[in-house]
Length: 195
Image (cartoon, rainbow, N blue to C red; front, side):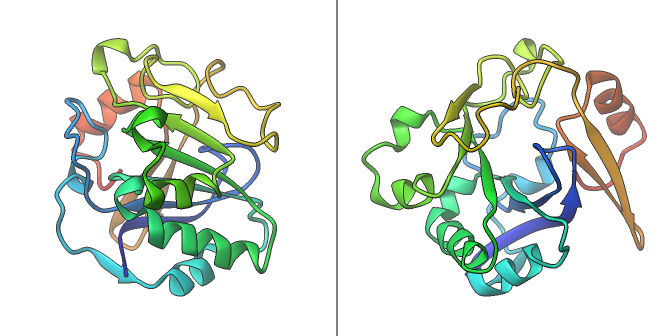
């Protein structure tokens, strides 16, 4: 079972094209200034099988890619790898994965390598608030972009303006993307919903 904090069925804010996004619950790093502190505790959230999650991610026919974030995706690597395989059995999608681990820390760990085998772009490293340069899809400039395949090689992950979307569903508000610092400050000021 996967422990899922949140799902966004379609966004253009976390990579090229229309992407379905999964944020998992639980993170061992507790980075100061984390945009999603509610997703750090390792507590029960929405329990889903890989097949259930795959069906949800395929809900919007416009989706051309997936993005995994959290929380810490590598803490649920086996279930997420099974999810990607289930999605790709139906539709060829790209995968971007954020992790607080460095790629070198994951290499040689069989469960992590199971997910890495499915990843097209890995953005690695812990968030460091003092190194947030307000550019691209990295939270801070110490994070590295690894093209593990050639599929998204033409997309600029480190430069360019940041993109974010605000999704409203019932009484919940979800901030999607790596927001510019001005939006992040406003979000925290108003006590924004989930991120």
